[in-house]
Length: 232
Image: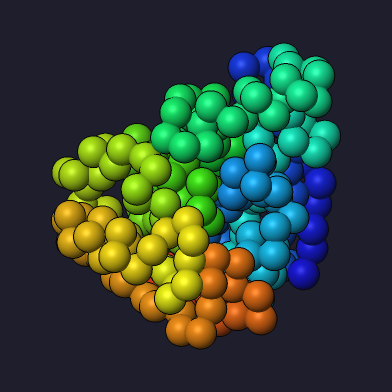
């Protein structure tokens, strides 16, 4: 497995990321990985995001994980730490998260430029990253399917998903403070097919000790869609 530090630009801000792939990356389908919310400790080195990247590489996929503006070494127009917290706090409970969407689109275009769309492009996001990832997945014609882990349905407006007919995987746990079982089931019911719902038992929002289990569910889902893409 190879991990390559990269950078790209969003709104003239230099953002950092990591490409993860194996030696056959030139013929690999590609996955964009979207991290949780920065004010909840979310960055590209999150346990779920890193686990997915590693499992996907072993399955023959290339992936890009990245830090939103102001996180890690990614630049931001806000410099003060307290102001940075306030800046991101707006998007924590359903407020404007346009900048995160812009950063994710920029990351997607970087990934497309390096891997190409003939191999297939997919998105996976965790928590806040699930919201951003699905939003970009709907808006981009390049994205064939997307996976969402611990989607906080009660915090955000998901009207953008109403007419989406792309493949969708939703993963949830039994004891998730950010994405309850009831909210997840209701949100899933409102989605158009094709759609898949997976419960990770005996776990919570952080999936400690279940990272590989979650990652293999994501990998299997994208593998099925990748095979469907190249055979149709």
